[in-house]
Image (cartoon, rainbow, N blue to C red):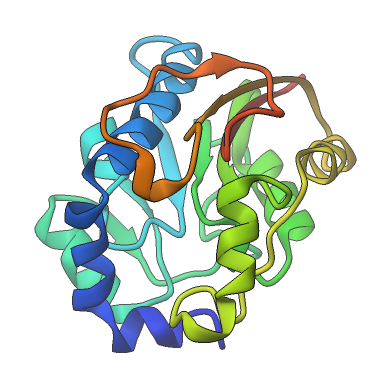
Length: 212
């Protein structure tokens, strides 16, 4: 579990990032919320690999899974019902949810298997929403270049958008809808950005795809 250990050991550093990069974080939330609103009102969903609940809480997601014990403790304090599990083996029944959210593709052992599990637990007509750093973007390249100096990205895998789309299609999802944010380098973002449709400009991509 190489991907889990840094979140166990450097919890305070993880939490501090959100304050140090407030506008980056809020821009990501803005893009995620834009896609979530398309799922519809009065829907039930989970976040997979929800960490300390930094995304789930403001997005109104009340349950999910997280393999790091220290992260689960923080998420529980934020009022989230979180179970100890991994993305490739979700502890939920078939066709249970209206949406499944990922904001941790870079840290998963097997993204393809995780998407197949998301497909299984989604109701017909439900949606998967995945936010990720585009591999070939300015932020993706910066993270890759300094990965050996980073606790959190040393073992991370970044994906190009077309690879993520292919894995979604292989898992059975259709109608991929892309939006993007984080325009520019992280240290130049000084306001909450409005997401744009498509991809190719922003570093943070949020795709919504449907179970038909």
